[in-house]
Structure formats: C-alpha cells, structure tokens
Image (cartoon, rainbow, N blue to C red; front, side, top):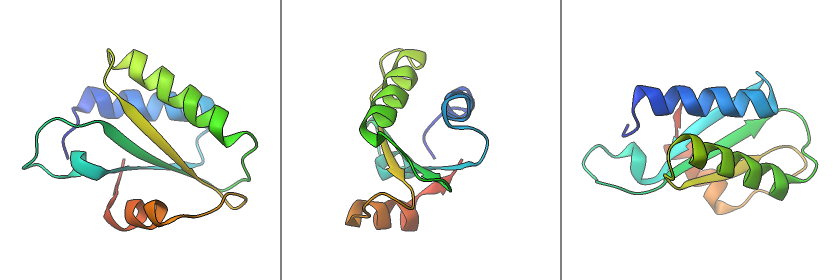
Length: 99
C-alpha cells in the first residue's frame, strides 16, 4: 500500500469527521500496488445509511483530503444502499484495501 501512515490517518480522520464512525474506507487503484509509482489516491467509502447529495459529499471529501495532503489528487467513490452500483464499485470492493 503506497500511502504513508500520516496520509492514512488524515483519510480516516476527515472521512469520519464528515460521515461518522460507521463507514468503511477502501484504498483501491494504483496505490495498492507497491511496484508502481505516483498516481492519485482512489477511495471507496461504504456507508450503511442512504446518502443524500452524493456528488456534494464526494466533492467535499475530495477537496478536504486534497487540501490536507498538500494538493495530492484524491478521488472519492461512494457506495450506499440508495446509490447505483457500477463496475468500478465491484473492482474497488474486490481489489481495495480496507483502511
């Protein structure tokens, strides 16, 4: 996993501040491969409750995380019972590493 312990803690803190303790956070994409270099940080946030305004939540999370990580690009994907599931969700669930 190619994120630092500090980045790991920043992600946990910000996501839990905005969405509460009952979320699961998965890192997926190129950052899960120790042999690769660079790349943005891709996160899947799984919520047990339905989500209102998912685009706003994703954008707010992404912006706060990017600021906290000095501009490192962070993509946020949400998964909740009321949201459509797409193939990228399945990839993130299958390949992602729970933080």
